[in-house]
Length: 243
Image (cartoon, rainbow, N blue to C red; front, side):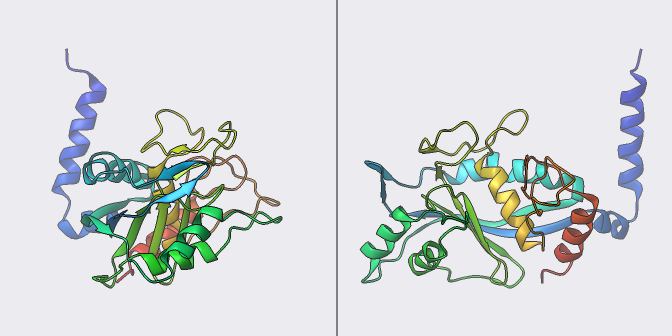
């Protein structure tokens, strides 16, 4: 006997396929990204040397699908224009820049040191950027208790491959999981990419003092993976005019 639910699911798929192309295009918005894995950079931290370890295959097989799972409720799909490894630059002040990144930490108010991002912008070759395409750079490390950063106007996202952030992690420096199975616990590299893309799409962190919805991809108290209706509407408007 045919499962009724399976029959209805199949019927729905057929009806969607029969929709005019324009209607289907309106239902799903593509956001194009260029992913750069930064190589040739060593960050000394707590007696260890942190290097890039994520591969192009990891990005294609794990990160992009997981980011798309998180953004599926908004009808937004991330499509990789390119996925590449790119060596870091070697300006004369390279050693000082690297030392500054390794020592970066949050201040008494919990704010991250912006100098570490300025340092990375002097170490990354951003040539080849295209209007409308978001640049996502996977770097070894972003500083203590930090996982990602977005320069919204430039459409540039930096995400760390090593982290010492996360609930229950006790500040342990570790490779960031590509994706986190099951409910949100400490996050993952993929979730951070999805979160930072939210900033590119016009979303901000919730105000913890007045927050009434929890389990959100954009953080706040009790972060998680959910997008609010208002966030979805705003992100879709931005995604539709990234060009």
